[in-house]
Length: 368
DNA sequence: CACTCGTGGCA
DNA sequence: TTGCCAAGAGT
Image (cartoon, rainbow, N blue to C red):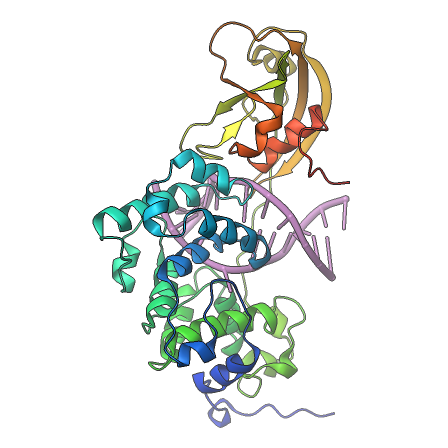
């Protein structure tokens, strides 16, 4: 039962080779990925596919990305076709995936590659980093995975693996430079792309946030966090602040032709460039009087329940008001769109919730 | 550097 | 049920 913890100078240092051996056998099969055996035969991934998957995967689960990746690559098979697509089509196709600045930058990046780089993605970390929507992580990831450059790739998975390997006590995000140095030190010149993907696969399937499967880990003989018997304690993170509640109202108007009143949000900020139903401002306190004054036009608005939606940094509670069927009032209040054609609109999930509260049959995929 | 910026799944 | 969190970027 007694456990011997070796002195640090007795402990072997982590190396890439055992991880790559593990990856050869236990890698995930993903639609945008070239398997390690194919990669060894000289098959190279499509940089367009790697770039698109990496952008979609920013703060987003693999499960959520798969359907969107299939949809985007089927509709726009090359970066040139994406660059020439109407922005509204791209935003509508992205609807539901979240973080909509990614979609705006995806389009801008495609235009830059197609029209300023001859349709060829830059093959260096520095060249990629200069493109819209490509930051420290994505530039390194595309350079490593698509072009086999020895870039130090660090995402949330790698942060977790590294923080445990070295039992780093300093909290994130301040400890990122220290962790990045460790990744750079560990990254091999041979198979750097597979190494990056292996680190992320390890974090996603073995070195998980809760209950890591350390018995199956290729690093379990060198992991300092495992030696402490508390691997789950890492990575240490700074305390996060409470999530405030904002209140507002949303207005669903339907005319006698079965059309609903929609608007386009401003390009910047929350849900920027996406479609919405008319709403009040979202404020910290309810104000019923101003709510009704914020209706898109005077009408016999009827209460139709409420919805709640959690964003990254606040919770939104919307009172829902409904009117119709009515004659569409004169004046420019937005665009009247047939309820049967809402699937083609760039509607974020919170707006679909608001519409579904007033018109339960609006979306065929309503759950329950 | 701290804050903004979505969504759905899961324990 | 509530909180956590998932291949981060831009400002």
